Image (cartoon, rainbow, N blue to C red):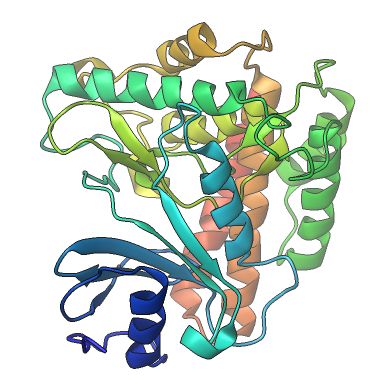
Length: 340
């Protein structure tokens, strides 16, 4: 074996990984250097570098998992299927289901060079480049939705059709399971949303968490070079992705790092209307973003935040965390109710 420099692995044996990679990827040279990538990924992610090869590894977290959670095999499947489609994804190299290597299934992809921003105002970027980067973001999302999912072997990647009805039912049930308080806005949304689902029933591949923080931009050019974190990808309605991206314009900076109340013109950032228009020009379907889609996205996030608050109250998280996420749940529910 070539040896291992960094043992920051979170519990698995890097020597076993090194042995596996040197056998699976002939020609790698030097010591394996591992670096845990910081951030909110629910699937632990690492840079795995040799002298002549720069890789990224994503694995399931250790311990007991829900059957459908942390499905790294689905992530690997979709990035492999999207290669060559015009949707920029990191090149997938291999998937390993053998738990003997790092304790869980994992996959390996080539490392892509670029910039990742966790602030959607894109600090340090010129006004002109900010506008171009958001336009690229919209075009790439449309490119994903334009992919013929059957032609790339993903016709069984989810359930086609009836997406919003199934999602509203799912998140309404989740609210009943996780609620820590009464919320008239949530109740109103659970009644209103099922009655106002648009007739259009387009099905496409959807990312599930498409936002600035899950995109990698070129090191110096204002364009997306890789879409990251495909954990929630499935077949669904394309406007669910657009509405999820729109959360940035519907929440203020102190609630979810959003743009509401910011001077978009001064920053060189598009309005939500402009972003949606950029997307619509590039998308092949004719469905139009409406308040229904925006209200659904806010409702979904309100229930997610309520679930986090509920777990914080009953688990080890601080009461302050529970109060903060409970506040976000109420704020998002109010904003959704105002839309309808």
